[in-house]
Length: 126
Image 1 (cartoon, rainbow, N blue to C red):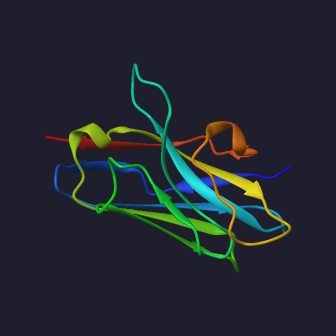
Image 2: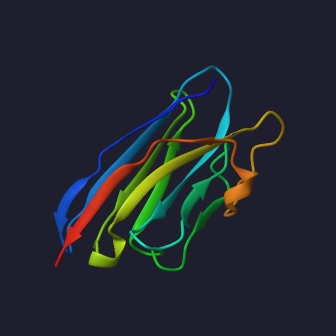
């Protein structure tokens, strides 16, 4: 069973920055990404990265502010969040899908991901 361990959430003022990390257990290789869910709202895609790093997807709401990156050696994904806004407040969940062939696959769709982390709270105050 693959486990995803997230860290880096917290409370920050608007305009500030946070960096989220997520490590996947096991020896396989993964595409990884992030979703978020704010209170009373549906879960939404944030960003994802392919195994090779050649494919990067971002939600329009975070383009230019958030940067996703990965470390294949450690099966770790990072989400650097800059210029944070109160509307970025949500529980951020890491996702992963085992990728055995090809390195360019990734997805923005909830149903494409096999593994989900428990989530880390990000709160942006105005």
